[in-house]
Image 1 (cartoon, rainbow, N blue to C red):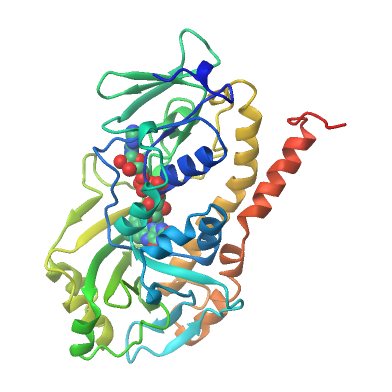
Image 2 (spheres, protein in one colour):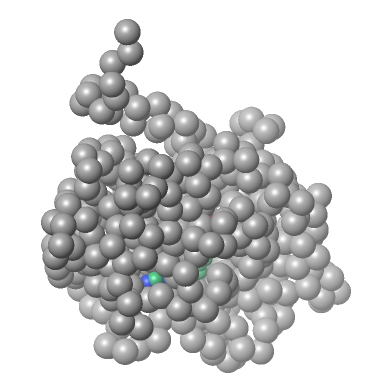
Length: 396
Ligand SMILES: Cc1cc2nc3c(=O)[nH]c(=O)nc-3n(C[C@H](O)[C@H](O)[C@H](O)COP(=O)(O)OP(=O)(O)OC[C@H]3O[C@@H](n4cnc5c(N)ncnc54)[C@H](O)[C@@H]3O)c2cc1C
């Protein structure tokens, strides 16, 4: 299938997984003239889940990639707004305890349905390079050429390529290769998330008072918090209700083999988990769909030492990938750690515990390094490292 010999760059990149990351990567590579092939396990591109909040840093990346306008065309004016969060007590009268400062008025974020977002991206990928029903089951060195990589798929077919980018989600098959053959880096976070979409007017009719049109809200409570924001021009509210068990450290216990990571549960279950919380939370959960989805959140833990296994890249491109790992890994790890800490703060397990009025102090300064990070700085840093390593021919 598509040997690299015929490619104008002399090498070909194969992406495994056509979720948001795989698609975005395929688009970026095609735009840069790099021959790319994408292999997706499902029969078509698709996203499960409900809404997705896209932060200002990601909005900037969409703009750099020339995709923002296409995404905005699929949105409504009300979906693009300054992305400040308002944190409220989950119990009592939902007092606002902290508002993420909007430091730059151009710091827009987007609340959008996942399927709509994916639809906007799909139009930018050349359908000829997308292969569906291709579940990758193994990655090995090519027996014919040790510098190339052989992908094997569940249907028995194979594909030989030069560079493999694994974008196959949390249960990644590629990670096993990067780790050298065994992958024990996946752990249940002991947090579950209940998700649902609710028409905003139904909530308001029931007496819901929090204004979600201005900013997303996070209702914080004991070992649980609920995030809600609007999509579809403020018509629909996306609800993600988290509940965590902090007694069991991550990595000490996993779900039984074969247990579903996503399942439909009864609305009753959700209502029971959040019993005792304030009136708006009660209204939100009373209006959840009859069978909301419950996600057992898994994480990569302990963190990977590298995102790259050198010999995955051939034709001297191993250095390129190492630079990616060198630059992106510390940032990804920082985001991971901050997300974990923020989750603890929302659930009353941060430095100020359930002294909600003071939790703002714990959150202060947490967002800028995530939202104000400019991906172009990473690109510059990558070029500088590559130059240092002599990856580019000297001019003059
Ligand atoms: C409850 C919840 C809420 C979230 N909310 C947000 C949010 O508001 N904002 C945000 O930015 N992020 C959010 N996230 C995180 C976000 O959903 C993920 O980071 C993102 O979807 C990861 O994208 P991905 O492309 O890496 O993987 P995925 O979206 O998982 O895509 C992986 C793709 O690879 C395919 N695949 C899997 N295995 C194989 C294989 N062996 N061979 C070939 N193909 C394969 C799959 O079919 C899938 O299409 C949330 C996550 C959860 C669980």
